[in-house]
Structures are given as C-alpha cells and as structure tokens.
Image (cartoon, rainbow, N blue to C red; front, top):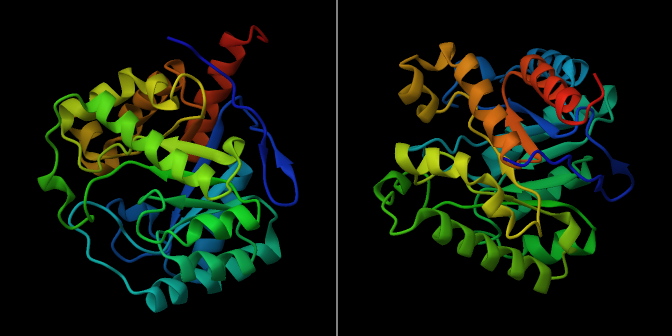
Length: 286
C-alpha cells in the first residue's frame, strides 16, 4: 500500500490543492436517469442547493454530468446535453468559484461549458469520441481526465473479458495519455481513470482497486477512482444502491491507500471525513 498526497493541479487561471490530501470530486447529475436517484438534480434551485452543500462539505471539484453513461444508457444529443448543463452552470458560477469538471465526451458541450466557466474535462472516452477536444484543451491549458472503457455505454457490458485486465487497461491509458501529450496537453494536466464499472465485471473491478497505483504508469500520472455506489459495491455488500455508502467508503479508502489521488463520490461529507482521517494518520498530523 502507498498513500500519496495529490500534487497541486494547475487550472487555466489558478492552481488548486486538495483540502484533505486527495482531491475529492462531488458528483452532480443534471440528468433524469442516472443510476443513483439521489444524485439527480434536474431542477435548477435543487441542483444549486446540492452543489453548494457539496462545496461546504469539502468538495475540491464539482463534477457535473448531463448525460447518464451507466451501463445500458442511451446516447443524448449535444443540444439536449447543453440544454441540461448550461443553465445550471451559469447559475452555479454566480454563487461559487469552486472548480468545475464537465463529464462529457462531446466537443461542443465542453466548449460551451468552458465559455461559462468550466475548468476541467472529464472524458469517459479518453478523447476518442471527439479528438478535437485535445487541441482545444491544450490551447486553453485545461486539465483532462482520461478514462478506460470499451465500446459505447449501451453495449459496453458485453465487453468485460480480459486476458490480463491490469496490463490491458494500463496500456490503453498510456496510449491515450500519449495522444493527449502529442496534441499539446501538458503531462502534469493529465489524470487517468481505470473506469470502475465500465466494461468491467466484478472480478476486474476488485483487481482495479488492488492495483490502483499501476494505472498511474509508474507514478507518471495521478489516478482517479470512482466506485461510488456502483454495482461492485452492491455485489460485495448485498445492498441496494441507496444503502451502499459504507461499502463505497471502504472501497475508496482502499483505493487511496493503494495510491489514488482523486476520488469521485456522491457522498461528499462522509468521504471528506474519511480522507481527512487518512491524511491525519498517514501524514502524522494527529
């Protein structure tokens, strides 16, 4: 196990550091169909209340998604995604300067969000679906999160077999990181995500947690883990989605102890407490 504090992250106009050793991304879904019902916030006032509460509870970054990418989900048009996302982002920016990442794989969606104050691209397609995102992020000096998956969300669970999951996922992430660098994105602005639950079965998800540090490619990149309330937590605990908080905290704690420097979670307050506790013990500040 190797706990490692996250390095500061340079955005376009400022540099941010995690409050509790590891960056905590609070999930906000402005969608009607994300898998965890309590994460959905389709009404502007409720979405704002939820986002500001996450900031208060310790989120370093608010990760906003306007298209569900759960297994089996269907494609949402750029127009619909923009219509869901931008009104909230405009409102949020009037109340908070907390860094915002946009969970999208579409160029026009992210470009529009950037113009309204978004700071980070979180792309589940690792710049494959919209390669033009790479030079755009490079030109604007924006951090990017590159995730591993196979195929589109509606069919990805048909692609869960690997000969050697850790090495295959690592090789893909290296390929996409190399593409980003060749496109002009600075190495220190790249974050890698092995994609818990995206074309992964139960065994592979568990391997990812135990081998979290491997996906940083010998320490070259920080690793993000997002297992929040996902199916693998339910398989381990036997609990439905709404009762998976404890299991999620356990998995995310293990991921941090195995080297994760970014955690993406629905339950910000509880996750922040966990990260604060780990930092206190690992860094001998208690």
